[in-house]
Figure 1: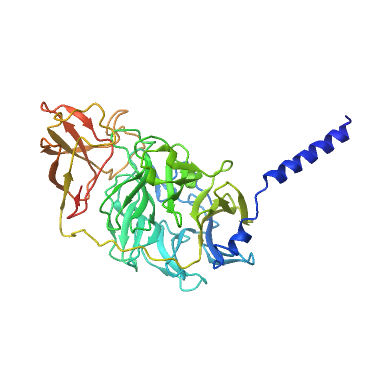
Figure 2: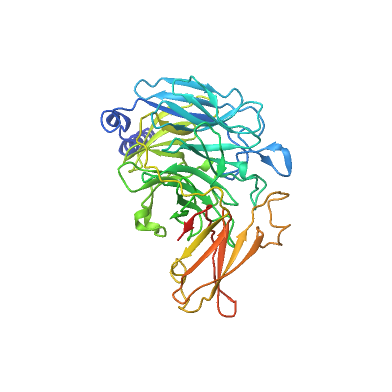
Length: 475
């Protein structure tokens, strides 16, 4: 066969393969079907940051206050808040960051107001702002020498967000920690509802009124392997595992419920998590249990994506580099928008009315200083193999302390290649013959337990933490 013939054959095979793998039209049928009432999306663009960690995009580094961790790392950012008309393709700038950074837009339930986090040019900190979907009525909600970000609306009107107001540092790195806080609708009466000594991230409402979020923790175990999905009530009570926390690896983040299902869509970021939460869109069926690997189904291969948002049971918005992309369960994609600048696309959201979730009544007693642990059976657990009934006589109650100051990203001032955290002894409580125990503990502390035998030897050691809010009884 002559060279021109070979070339022609290769070209024909290429186009045949391209045609056979080309994605179908996703947007057109959707706009005439399940998305017939949707016209606009909003999204942000912003520059990147130097740090490889998913969380190190706020504040500064403890070893060099002039080294900024936020996007641009101290240099002007090319960041904007945009609105995309899905039917005409028109893109409108709602807010120009003018050298500052815009992130985390969230639509109110009525679809008229956008809540977002913004670090204005010349400022060191992210704070919460709101603006109309037409770009008018810009208003700042929070202030102070802290970073407030990843906000959502609660069905009672309050706001939930991640903030560095907890005043602590990452135990194994040189940047600050953000945990979940709550405020009134105007950004006042801010209070912490999480006792975590490490990062919480990306809270989002579940249909039943609970909050789904990412919790990073490491109690006497690897610092780079357990950042999985948890749930709690909007007042911080009832904290429990949603999916994960037993098997190591993978950052599970940006999780949101999929309409019409009992599933959630999350981004599974490789290993210890990648810069800007980049990962693979993954459907999680928590009804199979928090430990079942089969409960997590990856939707795509190829380039990593960011900020997945479920529009319907089968269609999801994702950000991919400078592109805004529509993705379905079969892994097919359609590019909706490509940003012409150097910044990347982030956090696409539909401009739509959505129902309010049920309001779970607040159970916190603000004046209280303690809560109650009600343990039904110490022998029932996720990792109690080899423990016989009657072995456990007492529980040692310990508190894992936050890191209020920081000089390095290692454990060196606490231990030598050992634990990253200091632990405070709070006491012991009895376990009765049926395995139950009922005891009072300090509220809003990161607590864990060691099961002791009759000789006060360790039988099992908890490698996660629990906490109670003031006045809460946790069982």
